[in-house]
Image (tube, rainbow, N blue to C red):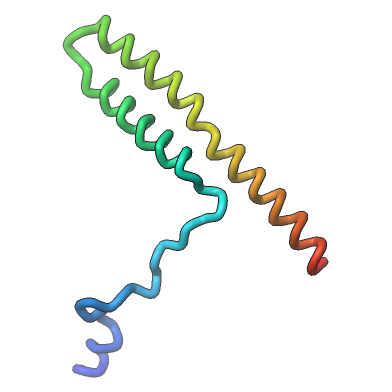
Length: 91
């Protein structure tokens, strides 16, 4: 039983084998855009009493959300670059 527990449970101070690996296309600009977008979304969702302020927050959020779409373009651009490199070295 002791051996089974030692093999199954992670010991204090050990790193997990399922650590998150960073992706090549993720940039600091995308991180900043994500943080701002999430902040504006929370700000918009929590504004309930003042309809005028809620509408202003909604417009701000959706304007920022449109800018945050950069993730999809960066991801597809990175994938295309990877495919081009892969076909040159190993078809």
